[in-house]
Every structure is written in C-alpha cells, then in structure tokens.
Image 1 (tube, helix red, strand yellow):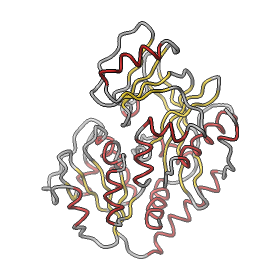
Image 2 (image 1 turned 30 degrees about the vertical axis):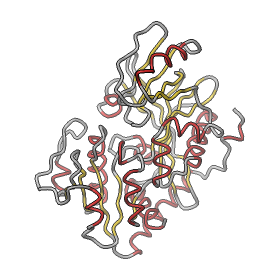
Image 3 (image 1 turned 135 degrees about the vertical axis):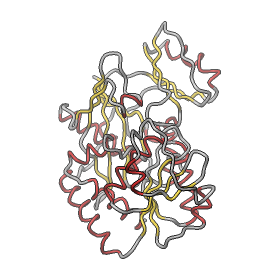
Image 4 (image 1 turned 135 degrees about the horizontal axis):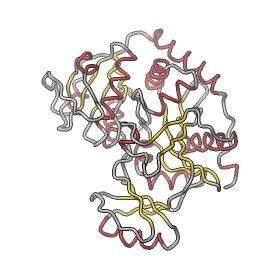
Length: 361
C-alpha cells in the first residue's frame, strides 16, 4: 500500500483532550437546551443500546430519556427506572409507564420541549443506517453522531469498502444480495483463499458472523444480504476517532485477544466470554501509527462527524481495514469509552463535546 494513502498530520492526543474539555465547558455558556437520550430501536442490538443509555444518563445526570420500543412506540422513561434495569445485555427493557407516542416520527413532530438536542444511544438498524438521521435532518433537529449520508454509507459494509479502498488497505470481498447464491460465491473465493468470513452486509455487534474454511460445511445464514470476505490472519485492532477543536483525531489503539476456539462475537464483546481487550495495545509504534492513520482516513473518507470506531486486522503485510461504526457502543465496557479513559478524556467531556458539535452543525 502506498504510504500516502494513510498519511496525515496527527494531533497529539493530549492536545485533543484539552480541546474536548474546552468544548464541554462551553456548553454551560450556550444557555438552556434540552438533551434527550434516544435508545432502544428495533434492531437486534437494542440490548447494547439500553446499556449505552444507562451509562450516558448516569454520566450526564438529568437528561430526558426516550425509549424507542421494538414495536415502534416511544416512551418517556423515568431515569431511576432505566438505571435500575438489571443485566441490560440479556434482559429486555420494559418501561412501566405507557408510551406517549405510537411512533418516532410523531414524537419528533410533536416535540414537547424547546431547543432539543438528541444524543443518539442507538446501535444497528434504523438507528445507525441513516433512517433516524434523515428524520431529524428533515425537521431541523440537532443530533449527535454522523449525518444520514455517512451513516448509510458506513452501515453498508460493501459500499463503505468501495468508498475507502483508495485510502486504506482492504481484503477481497463480495456482496451477496440473495443468500441462495452464497454457496457459489464461497466456492469461488475458496479457490484463492484458505478461509473466509461471512457477515451480514448491514449490522454490528458481530451477530450472524461465520467462518468458512476449505472443506468445511457452509453454514445456514439468515435471509439477508451478506458480505463474503477473505479472512486475514493477524492481530485484531480497533481505533476510535473523535472530533475535537481543530478536527478529528484518533484515540489509543485497543487489541482484542481471543482464546483458542473463541471469537469476538456478541458474547465475546459484551458478556466477556473468551476475549480480552488490551488498552493501549502492546504493539510496535509503526503498527499503532498505521492503525490510527487508517481509522482517521476512513472516518474522513466516509464523511463521518462527531465520532466513529474502525475495526482492523494487523497482518504481516500491514494493517487491513474491516469496517467502521458510526454509533459505536457507549456502555461501561465498550471500546471507545476505554480509549477515552486511556487518552485522559473524561466520558462526560466527550459527551458534552458531542452535544456541542450537534448544536453547531
């Protein structure tokens, strides 16, 4: 890979941390605004969303909290009830109060507060694919995270690779829209590669992830578009990128270590089964710099705003870009909060900076 594709002038993380703190402090000077934490949604990542909302609400103190239920209804949730909800990664959140609105669009059309800013604690599905972002853009409502165009592009793993391929190193991959044809795609790619990765084209939290090797059985996958990708053996890395003052900058690198036979799927990420997250990653400086540069390049190429997190593989040939998340988890165990802590950026300062960015754009 040509080094110019990932070169950039990296702002020191310490300077970025100072800028984040300045941005957070400036919120108090902007007058009254109402922060609404929107969480839940209809995707299979809604449990993670609940855990993110708990961490965000606990940190900010007294924002409003709106739960978007799987049936589409929207609830104004009692803060104490949300914080008391146990085991959010496995237990469904069931508000005790009745829903106020039958759907999110009506909730946005009849906002009961002045000067609202939505802090999006949504993950996956309509919360991350640009749908919710388009609803808010059409109504001129401020919200955190990337806009609808960048969200939609990043959520589609195949489209994201097309956009970033001239700036970062990527593995060979093919998109299969009709999974009835996936066997032929797998057979063709196994002629060139010993192992493949199968994952839903749109989605996160590593649900629906499969590995296929030469001679192994082809798994039964869900009836959704899939991306079939060359498996790259190497070290699993992830890097958050956040906006702060003079522009985006990368956070410290995390390495994901997995036990033999384990993988970094939903249970590995959120239930701590067979995985460890090393922050900062104990990797050579050159590998760290390439990983950070690649994550920043992907963030910029996709037009992201606020923050993002890129997943990477460091192989002997160099670092490969896998995918980018525009609304990565904000739970107490999530990767970006770990990276913020290592960079000496308080989670509260980070959230307040995101709110400031939402208000200014």
